[in-house]
View 1 (tube, helix red, strand yellow):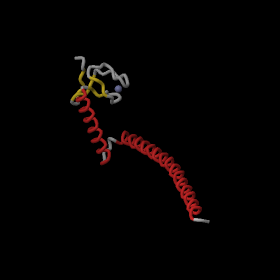
View 2: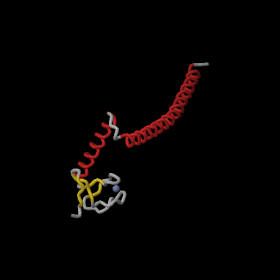
View 3: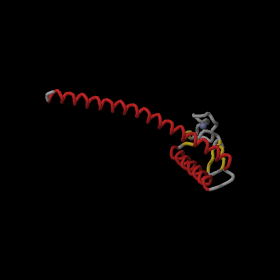
View 4: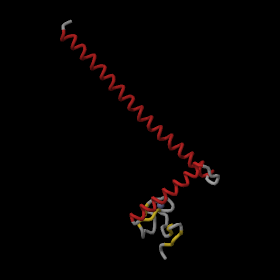
Length: 126
Ligand SMILES: [Zn+2]
């Protein structure tokens, strides 16, 4: 076997190895995508479980429940602040932003006459 022949064999072997690795990478990429999707589903299932637990135990207090209450309040405050800047209200039913003056939520159809302002219910039509 002369140099060029053995060199050629090496190139073919090298090519096959790279091809194999690419195939393997494609195979693991698909599995990694599936793994990520399953992890997201798992996180959603845990969150749903946590939300249900919170609803059932929120009166009992405790450090984590208190933290959830604080975060819910902060989320609500931020949403209200954003709504204020957008000249909108937050729909009390679905949480969508509804332009001020609109009678119904464009997202869920909830009537928008009553809004919460500084913790008080205010009738916009008055
Ligand atoms: Zn709505």
